[in-house]
Image 1 (cartoon, one colour):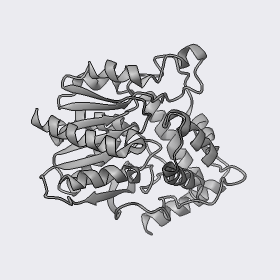
Image 2 (tube, rainbow, N blue to C red):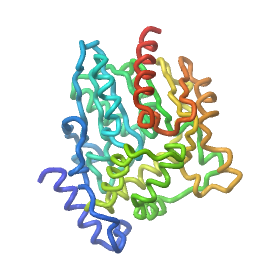
Image 3 (cartoon, one colour):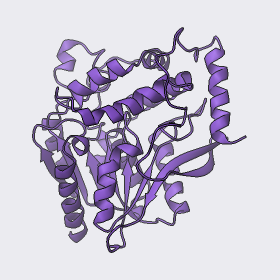
Length: 343
């Protein structure tokens, strides 16, 4: 049985059961398939089949050839928690036009990739999965461009496989602070799961408007809202929510902020200064909430700890500058990649 059909069948069993995976009484709305079937990616999707933790899994990815004279370099674009490879659409086109080969994976548990029922999520595991994908494509060395949670994965990747990383570019990465150590209360996986089951298009729009887009919603964001809400409200609703809960637990319990001083390769932080992302802040007491999620300060603090670090700030932009102002972002990214290569 193909993997995606097996996953759909498993999701149906899980949703019908009475244990921790039980779906809410009424679905949110009709949506996309458990591997985002029905959502159009900007470039053809391929699938990397592999085994991990005793499971047969697959990672969806886009592999886009240079549209200009090839420069011999590969950019690997890594998505964030509430994003997918597809959300890099504009940046893929810009990098391809600049001569880069562009590889864009969806991590296990996300988007068009497998949603396993049982998986020990760690940044080490996701980094190892990504390297296996790249090796299958013949990519031995690349520039990693990683957004949000992808920045935590890319940081661990760079530490595990430094010989494979030409440059590291972190775009509003989360993990620039250790929320747990700063006083954010713990939340169990079951509590994360209950929270994720309640996700709706309205709640996503409200959160993203305030946190990602500085209280200014644009029509072009609707495509990405529909992508996320449609995946969560589709036939794999319970299994998607469960994997999301496991990922949130990974984010909260596996900080990378202490590891930035260990990075050896040229690294650039690209920071929208109005970003206020802080996982678990909804549970934090007021005095804790007031001192976390300040990217206008975090970028400066963290870049000072990176031996070969450089900071590029997008004043007044939020968590996703590549979506808010894609032309401005892509121009800065391509310039930064060229400058890093020259160092």
